[in-house]
Image 1 (tube, rainbow, N blue to C red):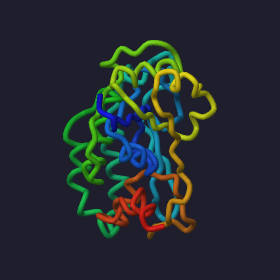
Image 2 (image 1 turned 45 degrees about the horizontal axis):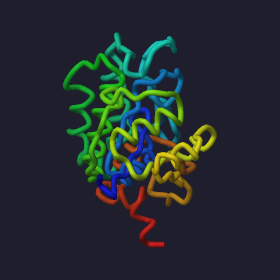
Image 3 (image 1 turned 180 degrees about the vertical axis):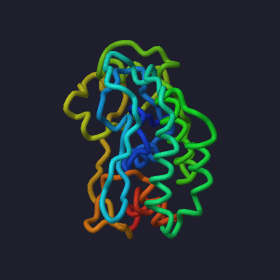
Image 4 (image 1 turned 30 degrees about the vertical axis):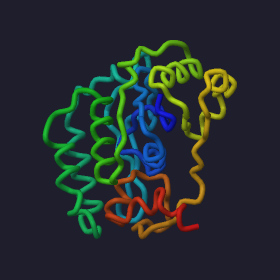
Length: 234
């Protein structure tokens, strides 16, 4: 067993915010937790970017049926791909580092028609990790056949990956039962999203809760400094 086998487990999200990548950066194995119930009007299928000085929503038309797992959500209408990329291009075309990342991101949006929400989200997340210089092992939870519900299921995923450390998002404190991790011999930690420094942004009022695309287009290679690197300079 690897004594440094750190694991995080999150549902895939659409062009996630910087905190999502802060978690991925801190682990050895990142699990896309997409064999769980899909929730509508949530980060799975929408996020925000800054356009004309204020946040706007980009939403993938994924339907309102909640009787599906995330990896069962099919995308019948592909017109959103061109619409979203056009919106992003118009919003950030004049940003300092748009040209640096445009080709890589345009290829995700435009090179093929995406039929699966989960597949698009996972592919985009991997691409963004490459752009941010994050090197991590990715696993799809569906391949692990994890059992149980809530905490029990998370622990089962960790066991199957020989995890010694589990990093959770802070919101999960509301339901995680820490004693189950303790009994399994897995250290439990929660990510702290506080303290992120501001960066040059076109918004009239600075907004942290937007897609990481905003950070990349505005700060380029310095983006990691605004996600995790700043902690080393305190």
